[in-house]
Image 1 (cartoon, rainbow, N blue to C red):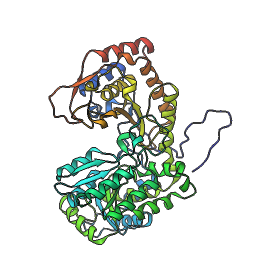
Image 2: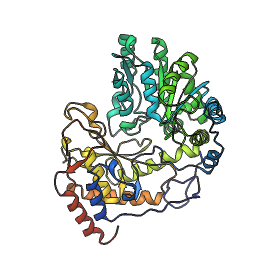
Image 3: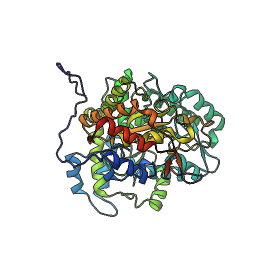
Image 4: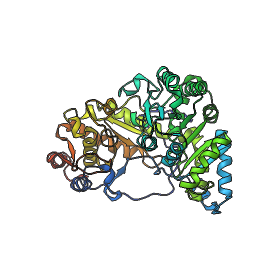
Length: 479
């Protein structure tokens, strides 16, 4: 990773790429933003692209591709069976992960479905460092359930722990010892999405894999957010600081029975993959892929995307490329923290996570502080973030469910899409919003439970209009 020292300027994240193609955008007026969030039912998922200046909902499938990826897409082999595109991607996966068998699927949640169909039975349990909605839903659909094994510091929103995504190894071993016959597999998420993109240490992953071997249970690595996690292993875990990214990946991969990932994140493409070395397990999973996804050499993916992923996996081994996201996120988090704005610390991967319960402590839990703050951020800036709390991951009782304490707003940072100047604009608007946070009110669902993360809500008062009026008072005719 390149080291750049500034002579007499404040250090800023330095983009290690140049822009070749651009897309025009605009900042809607504050009045347009209020109208748009009302039309969207105060749910940022329901905003339309034309409503946005900065789309920071996710980094999934929206990262900018390189010229090498776009060029590679032109050589895709559209053969239904026996495609040379499949062979090229299979060889690249073997080169990087040292796994002999590869099953393509159309995206990451399809990987989760194939694995749940393959291994989860009624009464099964899946220990994991933390839950993620799509993986949990597939497990429950097949009659199983999950057990959270996050280490104690993982739920502390402000912490100096560099690897808050680590497993509690004592708890995991107790589960494997007492309930091993009912354990479908152990799911290891690197990094841990819903607690702020926090990484898991390589040593902790290896210890989990050893416990799985000891008790005869499959270890399954969700590598969707692996590129950020690799950066943190390289920069925070001293034992591996002198290794290349490829060496770190090889150690990790050799320890795991199965690896799957969403290529919408890992690989800068749009698809997914399940990779492993056991031929018997491969043939077992392949049956489900063929029945539900497509022929096992394309699995529902476009061959153009498969070629792009092949090049994108090489990019993921480049320290300069995988460092950019965490550096932008760290810059956002540090600038906001310096301004007194509560964020999840230390900065993780995927995006900057704002602590809604501290930003708007006056909003009651059943009026969704995270969702309310996400709507307010959009009104103040035109930036769309994502609520990470009781709307996106519904809890039965906000006063009982401990994981509901993660009421966050995630501002994802798509790779190679936005500039430092756009981040500075966002920081400025968030500082203004924090100074006027008492104007932000709550939101409520318009329909009775059960709710879906895509459902509409409404404001409990006219607080959006009052916030917009204050914006006009302070900014005049400015956007």
